[in-house]
View (cartoon, rainbow, N blue to C red):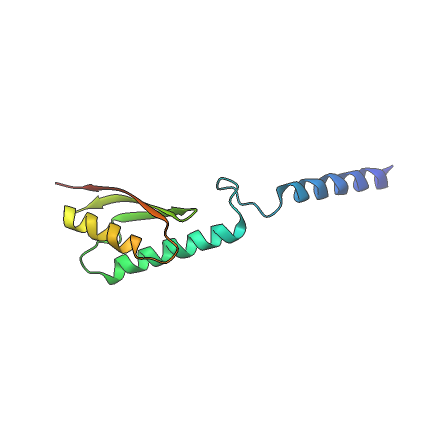
Length: 104
């Protein structure tokens, strides 16, 4: 009887694992796309820290399927525009949504 329960539990676990596949929880994105998005985010952030005219700590970067979302605060509209330009220049970026707010 115990063997049957263990076998049933094992089969259920295997079925759940097979059903989930390699999908990541973010909008069922594949693992490869998730890794690509992570690399894009890291590249954008590193460009922000390399460029002295952009405060990299004040701007948040998120990437999903090659679309980069910029949010946070900038000291001027020039900094906001520079951040968007830097993000667009990263390989793999399909589009940029700039939601950076210029603080007074």
